[in-house]
Image (tube, rainbow, N blue to C red):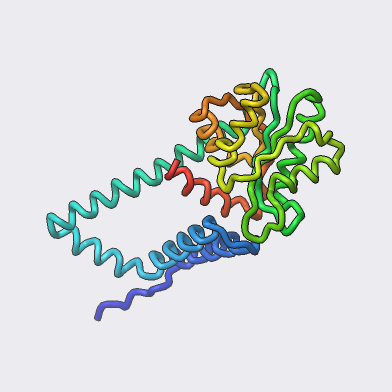
Length: 253
């Protein structure tokens, strides 16, 4: 009699442990965004493949016996390879664009991030802390803060950032607010009139998270803006959520 195959083997147990660990990492920050949803979904798919690997293997063998099945499997493999290649390429570009200092800073632009009520969230505070040395080192440069009002926010992200910067000693007259945007593309598109008023198209020091700089640069270049990149590192706790969300966003850029 054929020995019954075990569903859970040491290999599948290891995969399940890794996927469970990643699942906890995605949900541990305590907030829900597109990155959380996609990360949880990915973890569940990996876990399901580990548990049902024998049935999956049998299904693949059956498909491979037919011409149509071979075509489907080859197309799926090509799509998967393209997806992995796309993600890998963009991860490399995100690392490459995370830091790009300017010889001449003409303007400091801080991209908006989550606000809790009227208080800046942790990532927005990190961005503003990263911007302060630039602002202090370039006392004649204007500062643009961006971001509209989203869910759970009692004021706009731009107004919240402005208040925080003023509390840190930045002159109010230097700060310009872009209050209408709800996306990175909007941050730049709605800041163009401010930049035109200031007569600035280059030397724009963009301050945001490291993973966010590459997509920011794409939007800036489309609008004819020349930018430098000054990043704040992303906390390990929230890094998986933001990374997977950023990769998803790059599919639509």
